[in-house]
Length: 309
Ligand SMILES: [Zn+2]
Image 1 (cartoon, rainbow, N blue to C red):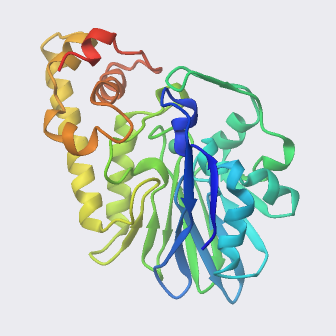
Image 2: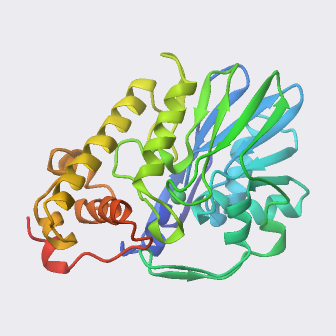
């Protein structure tokens, strides 16, 4: 598969992580006769390729668009008919401008189009991003769910309110027995909950529960980030989110403020395994604390609390 050098991937480019050059390798995984997962630079891509043509779920970061399209061509050289964006973050919508310009129909929840069509200020990411150019914008939007009846099955995107952002969907391929969770599932690392864009821990848990309700024991789970997952992984993830939330709620019930809650280490049992890759324990506790208190934006943890361990 193609290799190339690009600027650092994922959301690290606009977080506090220093930019660095990473070598990106695209790798595909066939999950059924027609559905694939493609890993590269940014959110994991879902692909449906069959008799009716080709459509994809998410399209990574903009700098790798040409390489992404090359990697998709190795699965099918049919034109890409549709892109479904799971949410508006740039590491899931980076190929939109190129694809939209070529006539691919971009499908997304109403709130994704609204955010992509206006300037976005994000406290957590420390970023202000301008509106996307017109070809990058979704042209077909939905408010609840939408189904694509192609390649031998009716794949459905289900909106789950206020989870990772306020515009997330998960996509179920019932015949292929695959679910693309978007960034409602970070597999193997603490999830980013974008409070500044309407995210909340309650919605993250609801999304995991919806995914589990659609799954059986052999369903392939495509997470937004991290390796391909099993249903057991998703069940463990749901249980972890619920327990971490209960732990933080207990501290709120005791009257602790955010700084005190972080210092109490309510996520200690997962910090070693999930808190080293990107989102730190202090940041993750802040996501939960603010969600439970109804504070709809990120509040940077005090430096002394974040390093108190
Ligand atoms: Zn995201």
